[in-house]
Image (spheres, rainbow, N blue to C red):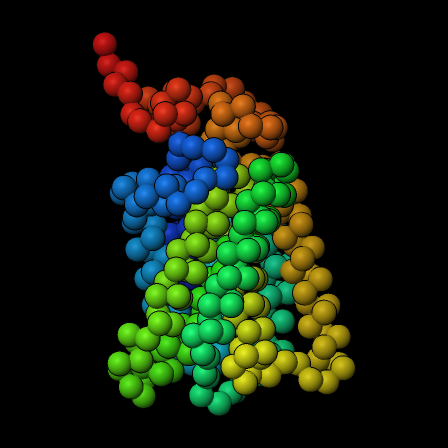
Length: 327
């Protein structure tokens, strides 16, 4: 049973990485400003490839949960984090860029740091409980952080913008995980608990987190954005679990020191990925075509055309409507 759980977890990590890499392709090509509003999700929901990516990511989450039913978290969670390397390689392959050793090393650093932090959190708890008022406060905090993130993100370079948006997006999804944990626990005891006010609050926060992540992908710094998602989601979820749901934090000074060291290792890896000049060239062209600040130069040998998709010109993207280029 253990070997099957490991294989299922590995398949889940690959599906999540594949889904996110597919979403990036349409996110960077979407019309609108560099930091788009909810209309971005409406646009993306009409793109077949983005929908396939969403289904692949959902399948990855499902496989991860199935794997957890047959093996302990200490085995499955590290396997799930390997999705970062899958994501880096897949994104580079889709955009025909060369994978650099430094990016792989940074990805490994993020994985090691994240696994170290997660393993130091206690994984036992009483039945989690949360009031609707508390959930609304959490949702308000996420929304406030998002508004601040939007304001700052418009004024900074793409790499930093991706970090800010992914941090807010990952935190929103981590908050969703905490609320969903309460809903799932209550539903197991009483199916009607699924129809409480916590469910629409969780869905709303999840949609907001998804919007922030798609905007993070639009910067072209997919590896850094995905790394932050993998870190922020479980760490915020575990933190809220410790503060609000009766779960614990690392208690001994040795564990706290170790957690801090692992967090620094993960942060260094994310910083390296964010500073990488190997930006998705489609995102760089998009910034130039919209006239929004500066973007990383395209990779050597790539054409300096202000075109984001086959047959789409910058004017098409400003209006958000397709143009018939046939004679």
